[in-house]
Length: 356
Image (cartoon, rainbow, N blue to C red; front, top):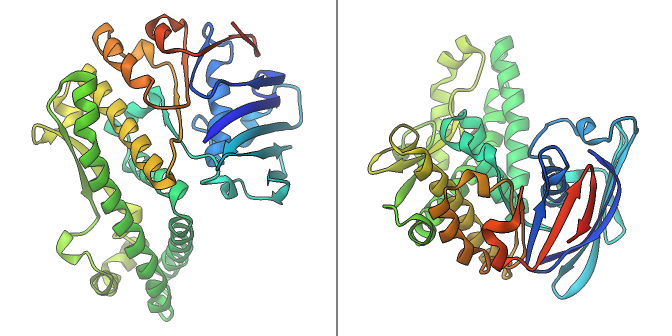
């Protein structure tokens, strides 16, 4: 899969930009605040239907404007295809091959990608919701049924929580059945994903830092011995009295977590900052390899401010890895850290971009 061309209109600080990209390594260079990360944000929005910097699409509209528009040409299955997105503060529109939709989530899986950004450090120290979002976004790109069950589970959860708060228990069992079916699907997929990423991690970690391997551990909200559809149904029924007092559902995929362990201890507490950076980059590369296998062709990789977050030794180890990733977009104040691997360098200045 290749992103061939990108048009941005009134997006962040890009008033109007139309740029073609190289099918391999693309360096996006420039000073702070010039718009490098905005470019990766646009690519991520095309790929996932969401920004990695804000939950509010309004923030993406250029100052003084009342809409943004993004259009891309991608090469998929050896054919050129078109994607577009529009938002005017109220109405969302997107189109794939001129087939319109009002949901940006319909873009999932059309241009799959992996993003490594400075905020990835929150996978160590952030809340469980951040780590669940990592799982959800990965799985939603490859499996439309996962997205269906995720939506179905949260709709049923909302209804069950309302009944718990209002002490109306008559229809609880019906919503619990809806929750149980989708919850089991979500949890099985999450568990398998972490197992597969855990198996891929050692190879990248050895190439990047020569560190000892790490382990990814799934931490569901209830014991592994209860990890079955029937057992989850029974737990929901068993916990009703307790949850009626809380007015909330206390077990299920909405309370899942996972963690990175290093030498049998939590990496957040016992790994150095340099080791954490290696772990995170290795995790993202493992993501890339897994998704590329699922789609039977290499997917996009976007790397934001990577050079300044790796020391000189880790930068030197990263260089040979870049050329094996197919199409890559990385931002950096300077392309020097990976100059020999770069096929195209773009310079961003105040929301304008030009090929160097």
